[in-house]
Length: 175
Length: 107
Image (cartoon, rainbow over all chains, first blue to last red; front, side, top):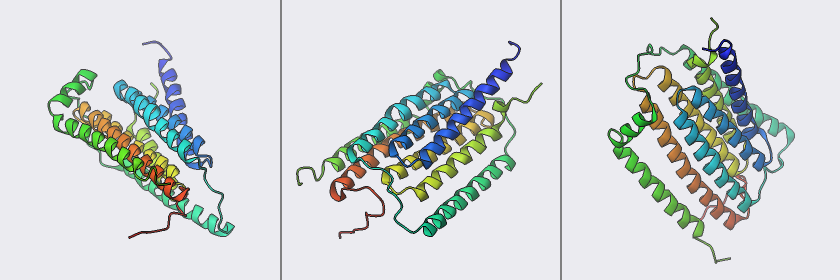
């Protein structure tokens, strides 16, 4: 154990938390949609770091591969094809403030309640893990215990691809 | 011995609650369909982070939560594909994806 490695890990952890929070705020608050997508990508990179701290480097890689590599790029395609931004508010200023206050109140109440539940909840005591949760253990579980959901999720992805093609193609050529 | 912040489940749970709250705020405030889709992704991420935190600190078998989060990612990818195709179809018909202008029903 290198002396001071605890401080290094804690500093890295703080940096990752700051990345996640900044990404989420950017994704929700910015008016340009493309910046919002960049915020989502930043948030997902931070989440990958959190998964790494949670003893799961496999999921960290999957998070970057799927979210940053696939989901964000697909959303960028959607932004390119629809070329839109958040519109300027057309309502009166007072109504705008009212709805902003309502949204802030609702989300703040949910944050307070869920955080309080998470901190105070009667969680079971930590047990010694049965497996080490490594990639071979995940692969073994996917092919034995969870083989039916594994097959079903591939079916869901296939149906989603076909459905997306069918929906996006319908109406083309009528213009 | 200092308290290791990254070994406390509370930090992860509070962060997941923050992501959930940010996603719900975005769902209420956003006026375009793509913005609402991004907020929905934040809510998915909050659920996944919660699963991973409880999986790491309290579950007897640490593979179960990882597999569940993998399934969440697969479902999120399918959801994004479907939603974007719907958004493109809506844009082709209305020339707009602002949620306020999509107020026409046809039956």
